[in-house]
Image 1 (cartoon, rainbow, N blue to C red):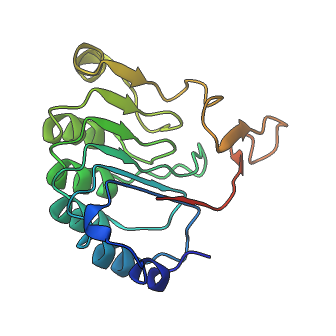
Image 2: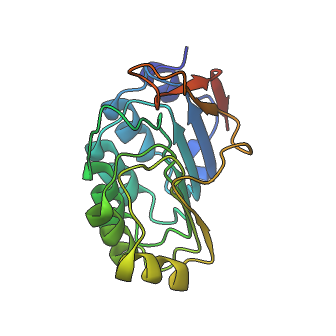
Length: 189
């Protein structure tokens, strides 16, 4: 199990770390990630998939890792219950202006959050919104995305190439649109 204490106990020089991947690390706290981020000033790529972190830790990551170019912040993508939350993407938009790649599979952002990302991250080339069911890319917002983003993945695009498999359960039950995730604990440095 990866914990905040484990991150703090790295035996190598973390100041040279350029890439960090945390997946299914529910024991890593906001405080642990925030403290660790201060040790990663050269970090360029960060993946936080299926981790329970708040906007505060993302704000700290943005301030402590000014060279960050790629962020993967992936969650489970549920259609129901219908929950909207822009806190995480607002923290990204306000603190990570240098992002080129942003993957938000299963995020609960809305069109307002997407607008903030487009405004706050002017260098985005890749934006992955698969399973972001609160986003509707119609009108000016959709046009802005397609004109500006070179590689745009839409909410209903296939996740077949994503290692954490999401399958929509369509047996007609109450949870008919709730995906089943097959995940493994992974940490790559």
